[in-house]
Image (cartoon, rainbow, N blue to C red; front, side, top):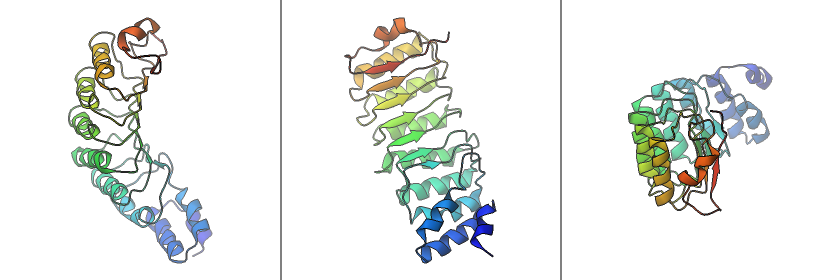
Amino acid sequence: MSLLRYWHQRDFLNTFRVVQFCLLANSLPIIFPLIACLHQGERLDHRSCEALEVVLKSLHFDFINLQAAQLEENGASSLLDMILYYESTTHLDISDNSSMGTSSWRALAHLIKQSVCLYRLDVCNVALVDYPVQALSKALRSSRLTVLHLQHVQLSGMPLYTLVGALKTNQALRELHLANNLLNSYQDALHLRDLLRFNNTLQTLELSNNAVADAGKCSYINPRTTWFTVYYVDVW
């Protein structure tokens, strides 16, 4: 069967058998178009995730986009473990994967805590409550991440309190994006002020489309000097 026919198939197992052949043949120019079939919204089940190992152990990526990949529990855990083991990427997006369970979040937390290459993580459009926010927060205490996107993850209240508690001692994070989290101008604003009071390395905090998105509250939330940036979009 020709490579062109494989190119147009959506069967990951067949696709990565071809990738494996290309690796053995040192045919890197052929590999990259094949990898391009991994795009936002493509479903990755457990078998598909396992098939990706031949690529992850051979190539390093600037960006792995698993957004809306419908990651299953076992598949997500295996894939995240592989990304950590092979240090496969510097930027990972796992947004819009609402089926991730306890073992998946545990694997993600382990990746965040242990990876020496991962510098940006996007976890958006999921419910970051209970165990997910606890696992993520614990890992962030000592992670090397410099950019974290947590848009639309239901952070208001206890989840934000848990996250802030971890980030107070984080010495690596430079950008924190918290748009669309229904953060309020009272308790949530106090948590954010505590974060900026104790964390001296964070340089950018995005609060677009939240109830705290009021330019008049900028000085209240931000006790820092002028080099620190708080982004607001007042839509309320």
